[in-house]
Image (cartoon, rainbow, N blue to C red; front, side):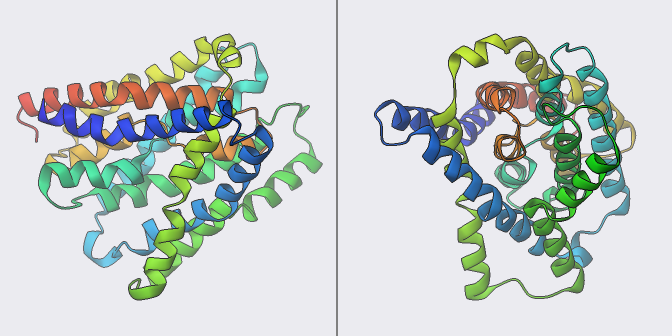
Length: 314
């Protein structure tokens, strides 16, 4: 019950922020144009700052664990491949990019550290998991959303060139590269500059959630409920059921196993919606999956935690 309450305290405010955005739209304070501009702002400024601060604050020399990092990287890559293969089942090709991204991309950085701190009192292996998965999450999201952009007919040289340019100039990629370089070089990330960067980054989640709530369309969401529910099942149950036993077989225990659980089975991150809308996608699958996974993840994470605790693995 304690873990369930913690999970609800972590996911409840996120869901309420979406509802608040929807409420602001209904009472006329936010309109769709303003919400779209706010979403664009989050994509270009706070979200890259958030990713930069997450990675720049990690001490590579202290947390480096090559076996764990490689495991997180490989499992993330396989998860993306599985999501891509499953997406071939949908006839509506315009939703493929969103479906793939929403199926694999967790709120690992936001929820991971808080979840592990609640159990162990410190961040544990969350920063290492972030190194192994979050950069790949974002890089592959840019690639997937570029290649599966609605209205794009096939892949030719012009599309490849445009996609490559979009990847190397993408604010998310630039934030990741800058954060990794900052951490790898060993530059200090503290004091007034760090607080300023962190404060800007902290705007990403609440603003992104309100923008998503303000543009949420229940009629469109209902029309695409089947792929959204499928993505939700994959995100909260499927990948955990497949890869958590493999993690146990590799000898991962305690905070390592909890970090892997968060990586595999936490709610789809709001960044999915922000990126989808800013890269030419409708955003319906993304927003619906984020809402569903946020609502249900408190219960599924608690169940998974209960199972691995009962087995004496944490």
